[in-house]
Image (cartoon, rainbow, N blue to C red; front, side, top):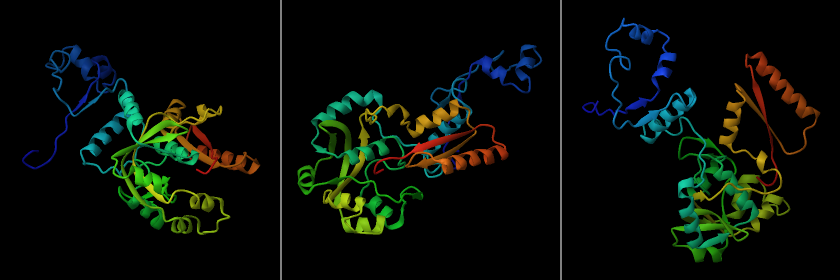
Amino acid sequence: HEAAGLPFFEVFVDAPLNICESRDVKGLYKKARAGEIKGFTGIDSEYEKPESPELVLKTNIVSVSECIQQVVELLQTQNIMPHSSIKDVLELFVPENKLDSARAEAEMLPSVEITKLDLQWVQVLSEGWATPLTGFMREAEYLQVIHFGTLLNDGVVNLSIPIVLPISTEDKERLEGCKALALSYEGRRVAILRNPEYFEHRKEERCARVWGTTCAKHPHVKMVMESGDWLVGGDLLVLEKIKWNDGLDQYRLTPLALKQKFREMNADAVFAFQLRNPVHNGHALLMQDTRRQLLERGYKNPVLLLHPLGGWT
């Protein structure tokens, strides 16, 4: 493979012997134990574990689908398979083992105070709802979205609403030149923004392209016009899950938590219904009919994700 210029990756399928025997559909282990096969690895021949495999799959602990995902991630990190081929959820939380140092760093960094709307976008980004974004949009991403309704850096991803962080001219002049800054909400530091990029907040163009109007009576237009004259994008590191302490946080599951919940429910299909108002009879009929159609197609346990949407986002 080296002569041909082909990369080689060693994958160690790490499973106890009893697990291997339970998966032996050909009965080879049984024959080896009976002495019918000589020199059988693990029975009368020692198995030499690889010294430094690129990937270890503990197949007695993780599921088949999780093993597949690990292999895919290895191929993606080695640039064998493009990230756009299989997009996984990209969370932006600081890893637990680095949390103390990140919090200490955030306290030392210059900070900018963000609004409740900004914090909602921090929640959207940090939980992976805006994958593949790594933080608030830089200018190239912003222009792709308002002109084409897509992100084009890593394949084509549909996204029609820019996710941006407005700041004032005073904050821009104070923070320009800093390699990182802290985002603070009501005096509490919630995130770090690395490698910030500042660009002009062309408010009229943004409103016209996103909402098709520049009328100041439109609530979104009014909100944009009253926001800062600059936008700052960068890579976001969020210190903890955003909570609102309104009695509903336990129901605000992240995409990864939802995936785990569906696995626990043994869902073989998931159908989602998103709404902004209380469920009425028309909604209920749509949901019931969708379930009926899925059952008719052969699915055994279709699960409904009822997704209420509130606020600006």
